Structure formats: C-alpha cells, structure tokens
Image 1 (cartoon, rainbow, N blue to C red):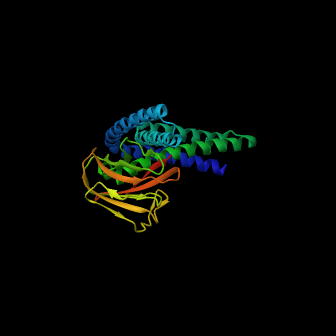
Image 2: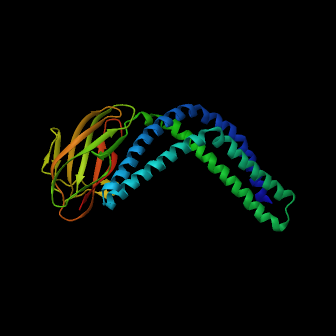
Image 3: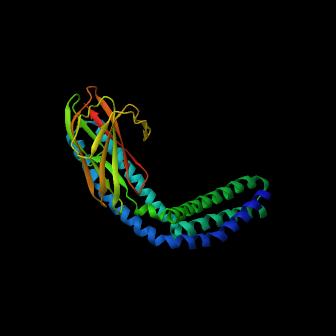
Length: 293
C-alpha cells in the first residue's frame, strides 16, 4: 500500500508541473516549427534525389555494395526526418500536456483503486499498471524537457554551416575498375543557413591508393601519418590531402577535382574518411566509399 500511495502522490505532483512545462515549451514551439519545416523540406528534396539515384543504380548497375550504401543513406534520411517530427510532437500541446496528463491520471486511478478496493491478489497487477502508466508519462515529460533544452541552449546550431560530402553524382559510394587511373570529383555542400568561412577539407586515402596530382591550386598532399580517428576509422599511415575551400555560401557546393588517382589492384570496398573544418563549427566527419571491382 505504501508504494501505491507514493505513486499516487507522485502522479498528482507530476500533473501539477505539466502545465508550467508546456508554458515553457510553447515559447519555442513557433520558432522550432518554422525551422523544422524548412529543414524537412530541404531533406525531402535530397531524399527524393537519393531515391532517383537508387532506382537508376538498380536498373543499370550490378554493384551490390554501392546499392547497399545508398540504401543506408536513405535509411539515415528517414531516421533523421522521424527525429525532427518527434521534436515538434514533444513541444506541442498533445506531447507536452494531453498524453502525459492522461497517463498520470491512469496511474493515479490505478493507485487509488489498489489502495481502496484491491484484494491481496489484485494489488500486484494494480501496482504494475500504476507504475507503467507513470513511467510512460515520465518518458513523455523527458521528451518535452529535452526538446526545450535543444531549443533553449542550442538555438544557434540552426544558423551554423552544416556540411555534406559526396561524389559528383550526389552519392557517397563510387565504383571504378581495379588497378586503373581515374579522374573524379568530391563535392562539399553547405546545407546551413549562413556562409561557411575558412573552410578546409582533409581527405585521407588508404595506403593502397596513389594520389600523385591534385587539380586544385590551394591543395597539398601529405604522406605524414595523420593519426586521426574519423567515424571510427584510424587514418594512421594514410596519405592525407588538405584542400582550402575558403568560403562556401549557404546551399552552395564546392568541388575538389582529383586527377590520376590510382585505384588499388585488390578488389574490395575502401573507406575514404573526410574531415571538414570551418571557422564557425567543430570538425565535421564524413566517409566516402570507393569500390574497386
């Protein structure tokens, strides 16, 4: 009974803090809604391009690695879109007030029933029901508080540059015949709402590659061990290419053209870690894949 009484009092206390929590969240809801809708529109455009590319590759290519990599990119787009929608839900009246209060009332009702009417055999199931309802309400409250924290403490993130790195066709996987010299381009796109300043790219090629020339006047190739970990990939022993891109305006791409790149003779998929630096942001980690077949 003591536990049921505790749950009842806790449910009453949580109901009392729900309205003030919503009063805080609603101050950010309008700004978050506007920013999220813009971001969703931008992501859906890129998502549509990825779907078109996937259909094209399925029709014209037999490379399962390239197709699988593209499917993984699409999956990431879908997860990110779901995350953005959830953030709006937790700041809304339904997510911040209606559903939490419903579950708190269910917990309170179950607790009172257990205290007043339940027999010894009914106490444990009633306790489980009260605790579960309270847990769901607390999970919704946590989602709202986390959404408020993101909106309040990191509002400037939406105004910072955000980079994507792809090959010329907009994908992160490219296939070439093994043991050949190839010319290709790497694109760096600024998806943020402001211009990125003092942008530099570090591209790390595995030891099996040869990169003798770079069609970029402000680029340099270093054979010194980089000793970095990018997306879990250690670049020790890699040839690192540094390229100055200077400024990249919002929604604009800059190209890094590479000439006479020697593709490894051994067939397989090779990960190419890429690190993007800018004046306004922390280093942005990316990974490209070159498939030698």
